Length: 332
Image (cartoon, rainbow, N blue to C red; front, side, top):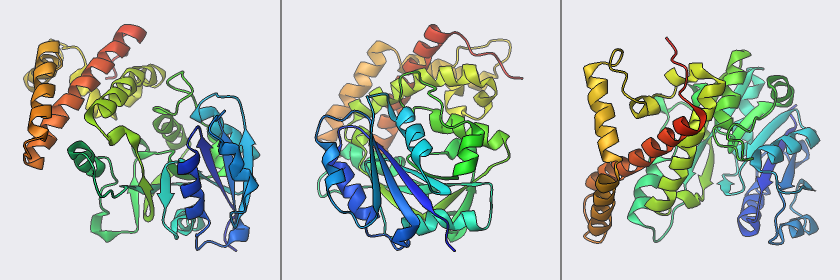
């Protein structure tokens, strides 16, 4: 018999988006009597509660709490869930009809598996150049060798589309608020690391497709601010688990120069990052990007410019984290 599933959706003031997500869950190929949907309303004020007044074709459980953030909402949903497998899903990800089936299938063969879905951008008739480029940049890479199930590392853990045995979720210790602000920022990677330490394995189910209506990639400014905040929080994560420094290579050239330890090439990279993140250099690069966007440049050129700009904000955020929380202990 197919396992019972609890789909947990934390939400806050996204009534219209949530309705779209629920419609997609109502069109699943998975037997409806084998899954429930637990919506945890984190203090919405936009009429989200009205979703409980409508029939959806499956067992919907609506829970409401005072605003505490996505981490608390996910943990609350897990506490109330009755399924043997928990599937965490964000309220802005619309899934394909066989999504639940594809997320559940690996659990039939491996008791300690954690499954991550395949994230794809929402197709729009009109979008900005940045959204067109970064919609692809932030989506799940194609499967190697056309495999439906592909092994991944705990770094790829993504709570927006995650399936884990209920018992394992509890044993690992549930989700932690790494950023300290109630968000899930770095909480998925931190959860993945703890699960990895307990012997869990990670796979991506490429058939479990979800189309992400991600507001943060609509424009360069929003995306840059998000990554700046995430990079500041990354320092907190590394203070909790210093050993993760070696797994998050994206921050290696954002560290202060260690003259006695760094290679010559790494010193050059760090120096270049510092120069590009300076006020004058960043202003020039952002001004150039705005000018070029209206001139229909090649996507290859704009991708390179965008990466430098986003990298500058990551650098600034990470350095802010070091000032706030202190230098991360060096792992040798």
